[in-house]
Image 1 (cartoon, rainbow, N blue to C red):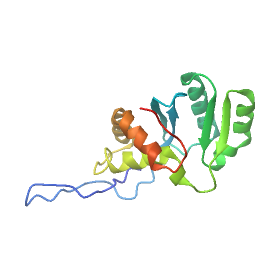
Image 2 (tube, one colour):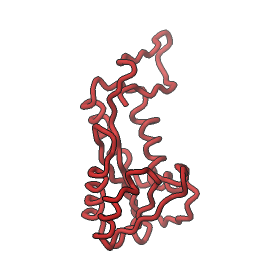
Image 3 (cartoon, rainbow, N blue to C red):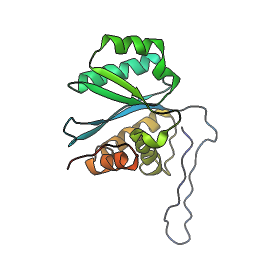
Length: 170
């Protein structure tokens, strides 16, 4: 969203930091992403897309196509129960792509979903205390943060934060 997430910060004595922004903007960026784990569990990746409107079936299918192009071999996708993830078009797409296997998390279980930790980290670290003037600014800020989220140690932390029985190798 365009409204900044304000965190406690440091400033020189006598200089209170001030964030200027437009209040209650209805504009937002929606994100779809996946944390990938290599078959030998040595390499992790974070693939994501930003959209200027809510994620719909067409954007979800586009993201799945990119996953299939980017990742080789069978893909086991652990997914939350967002309604768009269970749509008829998604089921048709899955039926056409045999190497894509979808399993669903239990209802409302964000603590099991590593990308939820990635989104939280993005909001609380590189995007905190930053004011975007418009969606283009916010998109640039998010794209700049993309480089930081490729850190293997950080991605392993997102997986370890969950209670999923996944063991990663160094």
